[in-house]
Length: 125
Image (tube, rainbow, N blue to C red; front, side):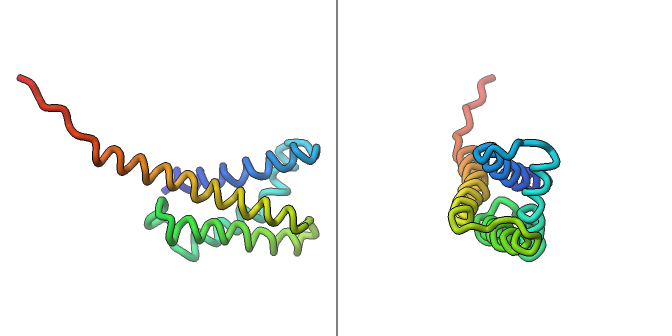
């Protein structure tokens, strides 16, 4: 469960860091924190609403809840805090967060299936 929460947080921090560096805002701890907090709060709300800790690698409801929470709540909190929510930013945020929050789960599910399907080598005496 903690690894899943960490991977979600890393996805959000990577998104924020890439965005800040592409806009020459600087990738400082304070800068990243001030930009990331709305998305991180939203992800936490998604975790709580869908009880993601019960099945953190599922696409539905886990990935959907974390993605929608981080995106929708994140944008609302950004607007309330006076941070920008330009349409182009919203599109990029929506797509990047979806790709990463669903993406690591798809990789985890795929790896799980591979390890379950892998044939066992015969034992030799």
